[in-house]
Length: 303
Image (cartoon, rainbow, N blue to C red; front, side, top):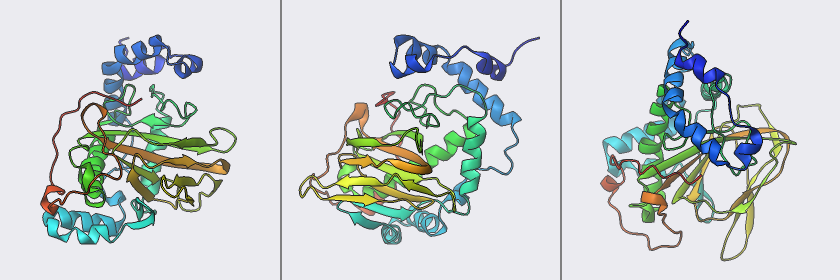
């Protein structure tokens, strides 16, 4: 009996955890040799899986944000309604309701089904080999390749993240044509914290995916003002997002109870070029923010 791509992907021998932690050459070879197999497996899985109640579309966004963003795309001069939704909660760090908390079970349900699909996914290296994480961008080996998720992800990056980034941080224009993303899940007693660091991005968007009532203790994101050395611990509510220059130092505080699920999304320029916080803020016309950017992927992945 002929095996399908899905059965072949599920039966394939996978690298050991130690090999992945060490980033052994054989691990990279494993992902590269099986890229087409895993892409076909994800397409087959999505076709066969019952996802009728887990549709990834614009209904997932917070209504106020969705309406303001759609209005800005129709008429960029109306972008002020988008800007008004973002509160500066620390110098250079903004917060807003990004996803609709009532719709989050759809996205989380989809990701739960992905986790149970038994198709190899590469977790994000460098985050204690996060056990429940996945690479989201097609530039990354072993990424989450379901067609519907990729369509949703590209819309999020191109229709939401990039114009919002250009509005809040005008200096990133020209350093924001490339996309990168991963999911993480912090669990108490497993992946407890992440030391202070900056990101290899022009802009970072960190979106909490916890469901209403799915509480956790600890796991605040601490931001450090490089000038005053002031430290602020910021917390997430379901569906809220923090956005900032990647150069802003930050850390994840230890999680002590429950779990915290997030998407972490980056924009940067060709071959990893990034805008540095503190650069002169150019005067950008709104219509140059709310514009499609069709820069082809350079294939570069930060990790």
